[in-house]
Length: 111
Image (cartoon, rainbow, N blue to C red; front, side):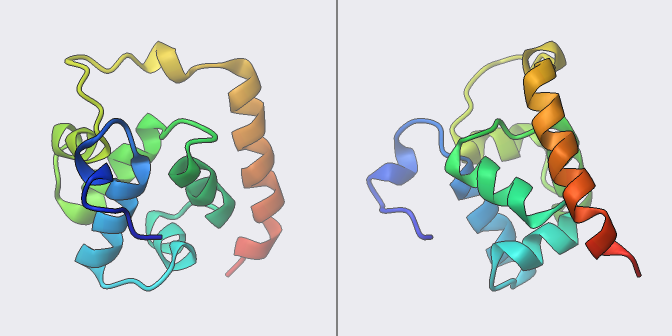
């Protein structure tokens, strides 16, 4: 999903980061991006849509893959906070949702 030019500068949108990663790595889909980031594809979809926050772990993996700093990635998403506190994303309910996504994707990821 492409964002409009006016939306590109307005507010928080994790989709801009995922679009930029796909363009840099020349990927065609969120599923290919998820494989590159080594996460289940539903996780990328939920983060792109804003249903769950982008996790620090995903930002670290994206930094390893792209070479972009965490600050640059957060700027791409429109996150203008000066500090990123990991406690903000340590919501037990959210952790259970993410764990369920990983558990569901686990058997399919066997190589």
